[in-house]
Length: 325
Image (cartoon, rainbow, N blue to C red; front, top):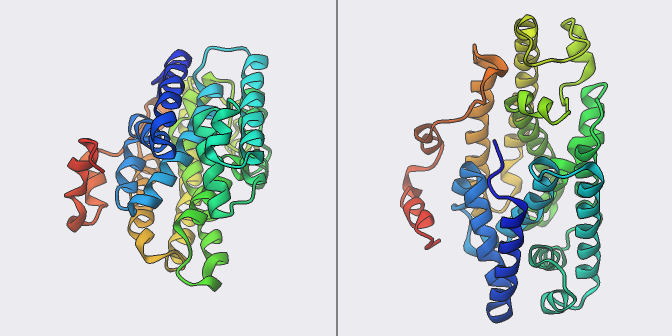
């Protein structure tokens, strides 16, 4: 996916959101966050429509808080040092927001609205503060990429920060079905975070390479005779397709594990989580079985996304795109 919004677009959004928040508070930031989600992720936007309004707004704020740092390292035409500087400034806003007494105090201190709103979610949902720092550290790894020797290395060094802790954010918002089921909910969130991130890696091998990144574990590549990945090299196509098929199978195993503990989440969140699993699982299957390999960016047609959703909830979608919910 190419850049959707430029750095200047984000700056304008930040300015407009700050102005709106001065009058309408946290809800104004949540509304801007919804616009971010709808712009950048059709799939996740659709599945989050099945959450209760309060939880949905918090999830949208989480998405905006992770989307902007991701855009810094993925799409803004900046040097490595400039990207790291912006990430450091964002981390400073996060620390300031957490140390402020309220959302309004965070804005008064000059903190970015999405960070200020996210810090409010962290406080309200008792999310461990260090999780977001782990996320920002993963973004720094994207600014200065390195290879990953094994799948375990990839998961613990990168996916933990880029996806697992984001799953933990959401688990705190979704809530457990019973007080003693929260550990299982976190386990499910970890497994789903790994699955989703692996699927995204498989979809974006060529695009990641253009950014100087290789997320396919070195040992899996070497097992197929690929010691220096080049997604543009036709002679690597067959071997690379085998790597993608194997990684897709690994991701599928994590989707299965995530689904196994779905009952650990609060009942009013399960439809959205199940829809997320089903939609991205379909994408994973398409990638793993594609004859085109990395020559194109795979996607799930809208009709298939709808097929993964509960029929009784379809009425929500036109209202969502009309901005009603």
